Structures are given as structure tokens and as C-alpha cells.
Image (cartoon, rainbow, N blue to C red; front, side):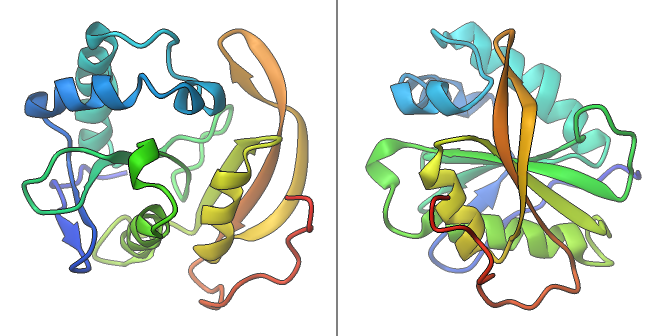
Length: 196
């Protein structure tokens, strides 16, 4: 996939921009929230060195390789309150698909900010002038109801359960899986199970 220039996205409520070294302290602070570590594969405990490694080893090469990461903010130059990234799907070499991952600071939850951000990222992912992807895949460890709520509201279609589908700090865990295609209607999927 071709390299991508840094994209600055906004709908007037949410601003997405590539995280920079100026965001290291804010990222480190956000990632002290226990629920973020509980539901992601990031290091626990999370240190400033982990935020630096994230920027240099994931964000920078991701933008260069068409797998971008955006910091979510409440204003164009506001502090980081969340993160959304499109990464390579584990175990698959598929240039037409990416896995979306995201986290949000506890104080910013329940306001629809992440749903708006995920929707904007998917629009860029599918756009011919963006990444031209054919599939965006979402996975969350069983029990991560908040992530499932975002995916459901962002028009992802539920596909099922993957046994041992995620490795978190050396432990293989079951996960839910859903996807969004560029041809999907922008309406909620009625087939999400009530338990998810």
C-alpha cells in the first residue's frame, strides 16, 4: 500500500490528527486508566517509554506504510483524549483490509466522540482518495461492551466469535469480530446479539 500523508480530520466536534512527540505525556497519562490496559494489548503498567515506543515504532512507520494512527481531540490543538489506528490484521497479508483499534480516556466516554471518530476513519479508509480499503475489521475481547457499542453505532456488521482470536500479553483470549465494508448501509446492524 502506498504511503499516506498525514490526514487531519474533523466534523466540528471531534478532531483527528497524527499524534506527535508533544503528545507523549498526555498519552502516558491517559493510558494509566485501568480499563484501557484491561481491554487492549498495550503494556501494563504503561510508562512514558511505552508512549515513545508507540510513536516511533508504530505511528511513524504506520503512516509511511498506509496504516495510520490518529489522536482524537476535542479541538484542533487540544490534548489527546483517545487514539484510533488502522493496522495490519494479525496473521494475514491483505492490503485491502485493516483492523481498527481504539481507546478513549475515561472522562471523555459516553458522549459519542469515539463513534464519530471511528466513522470518520472508516470513511477515509474506504475513500478512493484515502486508503481505498475494501474491509475494516473490528475485534474486541469478550466482555468489552464499550468497544462493541462503538462498533455497532459506527455501522459495523457483527460476524461472530473467534476462539483464541486475540493474544494479550502472552495469553490467548476469545474475541468478538465485526466488519464494515464500503458497500454497507450507514444504518445500525440489527443482527448484533443482545449479549454483545
